[in-house]
Image 1 (cartoon, rainbow, N blue to C red):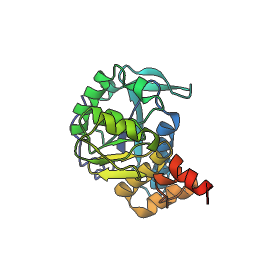
Image 2 (image 1 turned 90 degrees about the vertical axis):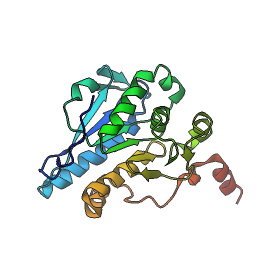
Image 3 (image 1 turned 90 degrees about the horizontal axis):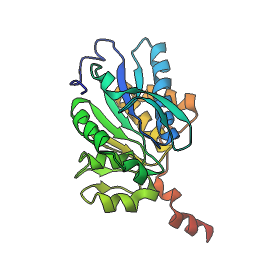
Length: 230
C-alpha cells in the first residue's frame, strides 16, 4: 500500500514521485507522451536548480507488459513502491478497453485504496474507465476519448462525461481525452506544480501547444462530415 503523501516533499527540495500504472494492452503514447512531459520538465527545473520528477512505471505483478501496439515495457511491481512517497498516479488508456477491464478487479481495488494516499489521481484517454470502475469519478465532470463516450456513459451513468473537453480538473482527480491529450494534461499538471513559465518551456522543447486551442469536437465524425459538405 502507498503511504500517505508527504506534503513537505517538494518544500524539502525533493523531487515529486509519479506512478504510471501499467497493464496489458495499454496504449503506448498514453504512457510515453505523458512521461516525456515530466522528463522534459525535470530538465527545465534542473536548469533552475529546482527538484523535478521521478517517474515509476509499475504494474501489479511487475515485469514485462505488452502494450496494444506490441512494444513491451518493463515495469516495477506496485507493491515494491509501498515505501515511496507518491505525488501523482497516472492511468493510461487502452484502445481495447473492454478486454483490458476483464479481470481488472485487483487493479481497480489497488487504485481505490491508493487514490486516498496521493495528492492527485489522473487518467489519460480510456484510463478513466479504471477510475470510474473504482468509484473515483462518481458525481464528477470528466473527459475520455470521444470514440468511447457512448460506452463510458452506458457503463458509468453516475459520472458526468464532458464530451468536448481535452482535459478536466476536478481536484484531486484529473482526466484527459484520447491519446495525445495526455500531453495536454501533463503540461497542465506541470504548470500546477511549477508555474506557467516552466510549462511553456516544456511545450517549446516538445514542439507542442502550451494550450491547445481546440476541443474534441474537431475529431468527431459528425463534425468532419459537416466540414466536408461546406
